[in-house]
Length: 278
Ligand SMILES: C[S@@+](CC[C@H](N)C(=O)[O-])C[C@H]1O[C@@H](n2cnc3c(N)ncnc32)[C@H](O)[C@@H]1O
Image (cartoon, rainbow, N blue to C red; front, side):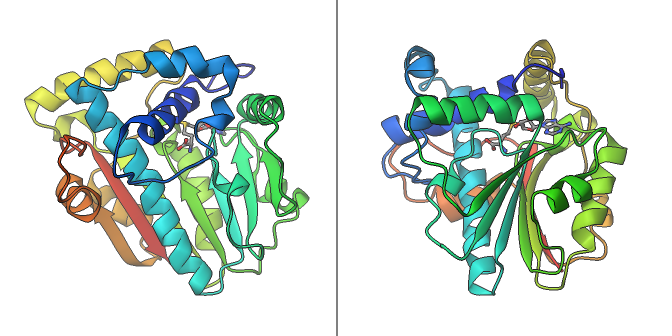
């Protein structure tokens, strides 16, 4: 990521979540803060966000399902006594501003420039910062996540749940592994949800073209893709975890998009959702 510039991909993802609130019924991911957080600054961009093209529909389906998947897993964690939720690369995620569990402390970890921009948007839209939210600015590539979280008041001895949505492809392998090692050292009962992309070489030819187009766009935005895994490769990275779930389009569509009358569903094999527990 470019050091001083807020994440452009975080904006694109947030526009899709907001478009879902406005245009899709029934909602797969109910997020009443998704539109307000963009505020007047991005109202025109939201209006122009493509919503009818097949690629846009599939991309929106992917993005809202992954947030829903994370919050479904979070709900299971909270029922099992998890009391800390760490959003790694939080972007414009709005969970903290609609958190229904007062006992759940949220830590929003993000690149400093992105986090600063988010806080300005929250202020501009008069969205209150809850007491059970703490910001922890961190650059995963060159700063220590454990140190920054500890400074923010994170309790390493408590059960925690981590969400790492839309971040892994942008990291280097050493930065990814350092973060996994930190999570792997948390107490039993902690867990993680993330999404990842399969390498170009593992994709059918038509999907390789879609991959190239998306890779070109994120590179232009200053956030090039760097890291992909096949399912066996990512399972190996989480070998000390249990109850691993790694699902692709057929499973995600069956879980979240069955019985719809519209075209909202995931296509292709590139993106996968993953969760694992300690
Ligand atoms: C595609 S956005 C996803 C945001 C959010 N998780 C969501 O789903 O809306 C990628 C996020 O990763 C963060 N990110 C990318 N590289 C990072 C790094 N090296 N250190 C910290 N955050 C990083 C960006 O700031 C951005 O918030």
